[in-house]
Amino acid sequence: MRVFGRRGRVAASAGGAILLFCSIFSFAPIAGAQDPGDPVDLRGFATGQPAHVSALESGGTRVADAEIAWSGAAVDADADGLKGAKLNEMNRIFQPDKSGKLSYARGSGLEIGLGTTPADPNTIILAALAEADAAPSSDATEEFAVEGADPLAYASLVRGQAVANANESGLVPDVCVLGDDLSRGLGFAADAQLVDAGADTASPELDGPLVALDDQDGPGVKRAVSQSLSRMKLVPGGAANNFGLMAEVRQTIAPVTLLRADPTDVTRAITIEVLGEWVLRVVANGKSGGASVFYGPGDVSPQTDILRIIDSDNAVTDILKFQDIFGPTGFTALNIPGVLDLTIGEDPRAIAAPGQDPDPDSKPTIAANGTAASAAVDVVRIQLLSQPDPQAADIRVGHMEVSTEVPTGGVNCPIPVSKSADPDNIKIQEEPDTSTIEITVHNVYDCDLEDVVLTDHITQQTGEPDFKLTAADPTPDSPDIPTGVLTSADVKWSLGTIEKGETKSVTLDLQSAGSGGILRDVAEASGSFANCEGQDASGLAIAGLDLSGLSVPVDVAIETPVTGAAAAQTVATGGGLTAAAAGFGLLLRRRNRKT
Image 1 (cartoon, rainbow, N blue to C red):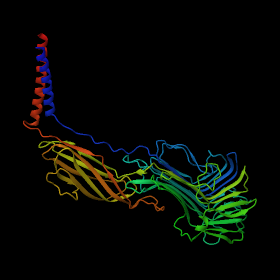
Image 2 (image 1 turned 135 degrees about the vertical axis):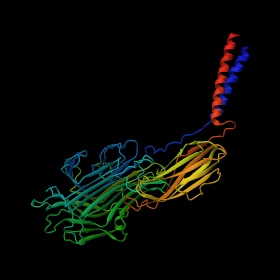
Image 3 (image 1 turned 120 degrees about the vertical axis):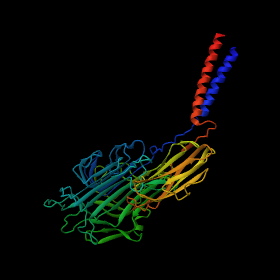
Image 4 (image 1 turned 180 degrees about the horizontal axis):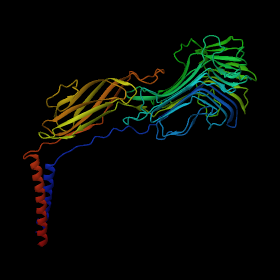
């Protein structure tokens, strides 16, 4: 009796479980959410000024510091962001501590500091300083005329602009800013003059400036504006959806006159006229051979004059062409013992540590695996009355520093495609027998997406399910809908243009046919960029670039049809049999105990 009772209990419980499973079978996997990406090992900066002057520096403190049209831009996509202040070669902060921020930019027209240390901002005159950081994306512009602060400085107009961006869509890494710069800083100054050696304070202009970037007494074309643009930008990396990082400084420099005694009689020691726009650019794309350094005048023929030196008699003493400067060594233009040592046209070199003299024989960084590049340069560097300590004066014209680092392989930024299936479990010959697939293509970039094509790939994942496509909005290019019974399909739409920041969606009705299983549904979008917002002067623009993207897989389960009684009756019968089996097992247990 004991053996009989035990077998009865097992048989009854197993039978009830089998009946319950058969009557209530369903399977509905959940599609994984699209991950915007972890922090990226990407960082870099660009900074420069058409003119820097510091005087009597000793022990980290300088009597005077002046910056004309100072720009800066930085980005860091790791977990800490722009943590810690960054200083340039002249020991000045071009990026303050911005922990947790992705990008930063600054631009100022004219700055003067007296008795400053590296940690001190130039607070005596801080003309038109604009700053921006992201995320969230932001921008700032400051512009006004400077009436002058004799004997420190004068400029007729100063401007600072700053733009900092992040991709805030949550669908791609926040560093995926395409079509605009990650950060961009602009410094602008007109008729700038520094450090008056004269005694006349009757007018805002300086009567005897140590350094003047204006057009008062140079022969030829009059140019009075100095401008520096620093920018960080993602650029094409040579593979689909793949990008590298560019750091670039572009400068226009007004004629630089040194030691002007009196502007009324145009007496001076020397004027340096730098022609055209000068560019220092580094790019790293994370691939072998993909790091590079470019330095030179932008869009200027190598045979064109790019720099002239004008003496005190208003005569042009030297005319330099591209080849004269970009040879194996720099060009020593002028040496006046006890007055100045002037060097022009050094090759790009390594960035010196803050506060250290640059090494003109050093080489820029160009990583063989393409993950890093950095360089610094001065169009003109002048040591005035130089002594080891204190240094009487350090004058830089066309100073630029750029650096970039990217992970191996670069950065991937696809077109985000999202999709859903409602419901994601359908039945055969009973409700619900139709799933509505919704697919959305997101343009999260600063360009329009043109000629967008969306293709929905439907395949058999498990078993041999078949289906019909009964409706779609809008009507696809192919196939014709409604369809017959299918086991797979590629449904294609031509969506035209998706403007920057916009989306386009389609829907597709999928109906079960005669066989169950699981369908896998993946959507793919492709298009090309146009009408981008950002500055493309580097020649590394992404307009016209092709981009693509895949959705995460979405599965639709087609339930195996139930034979015999209707489903509701089967569920009720299965539940009743399960209860009966459980009761029968309990009865057997009691009888077994009695025996």
